[in-house]
Length: 171
Image (cartoon, rainbow, N blue to C red; front, side):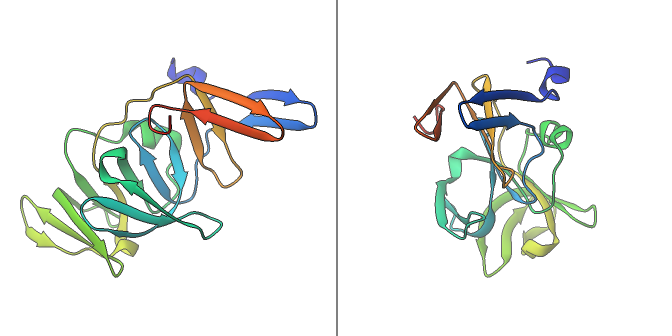
């Protein structure tokens, strides 16, 4: 899609439901490889599975291969789209960066095997973004929720007060 058209706001009315898509994004969260952006508070990562809680406090888990990036502060759409995706990088709030493999997140600290600095353990509270793999936006539909989550998909269906977004990740 043309980047200028991504900034537009789309509205649609379905009986007593109004859907308004505005790509503001959540205050903190997880970006998936399909372009979906989840409002999420990170809990831990064991090298295979990312565990997080959603804004309602429910715990969830995602396989590592589906996560493209993580952010701990509001990340405007322009910055999300501009995140470099060539190598794994941990960007700290103070402007420093660690290139290397993210091995874990436990007890509020990441374990990063940095190319330049060896094993590092930055605190989650001091991390701005973690870039893990490229984003390939698939599907032409987006549905944003009140918590800032943005679901991207190839199909959207509406019925009985439920909106369903179908993507390659969710089926």
